[in-house]
Length: 385
Image 1 (cartoon, rainbow, N blue to C red):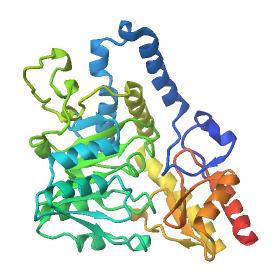
Image 2: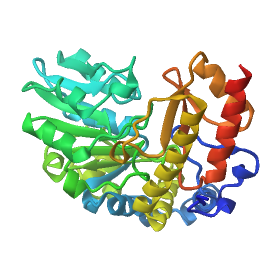
Image 3: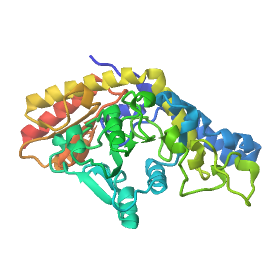
Image 4: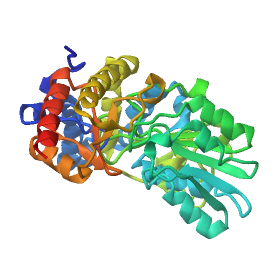
């Protein structure tokens, strides 16, 4: 029996269904939701009588400090942005490679990873290179990526863990590959932060960004962005506003002075409730322990893989502990994956179709009972065909 790491009372949806879809959207703990709602209510109902200048300047510090603990990074290197995509677009334009250079990514990435670089390439004439594995996701590897990198590579931008299969790169190996070629390593950690331990000091990426609403089990509307100290010195953000400055309430429109920290990326007001909720969600994850979460999620994934093997499914997620987390993506011979995923969802086993396959994704609130329920339903569906 594999029990949840957190109390199921914090996740009432399990009274209705079996949720195995964290890779699409994590379940926010009730305690985190309530903390955010209290802030939103105070702002909405009391205005500046509660949300004064001191409150507004400091409202994102909880998320910044929690993210620094999560990533083992300096607090000053963390920005709290509105989304992964917004943060990456800022970074892409701030460090736009010139004609004659290239940017390397993967063709089965979530589109928001390569799209900003494609737009940059349109403007600068740089080359966009994609590792071609979309037709065979199981063939993605570090070596396949390394073969595309050369002396003209300016940026490697990939996900730490792939949304399609959960395949996980070694962050330190990626950084060594990039830096050996004089390139920047810019990482999407949306599918790994909150699931996989990340040590910025040991791995040494140049930029690492994570949206809050998946494995961190936080809200939409908030993300964390780490910028290395050496890169921060060169960071001239393309978007600036009143919050980009050392003292946002200084209000001097005659001169633009950027904040000396990564906070210079925080150019505008945002959903402050989302920012606070992200901090509370990261603290929730930290209290459970990321190492403990990874071990738990991998045990559930192993149980699911073993059962799917017995049912004759084709597993395209990696099996090595060093390359996987809580995601298991499978195909079944002769069955349309989208139809199979729809049938599972109709049976209250919540999953997603991805790359002509069915993607299950288990997290700290799941148990072996959830996995067994999914296997029972999956078995009935494929036998009924």
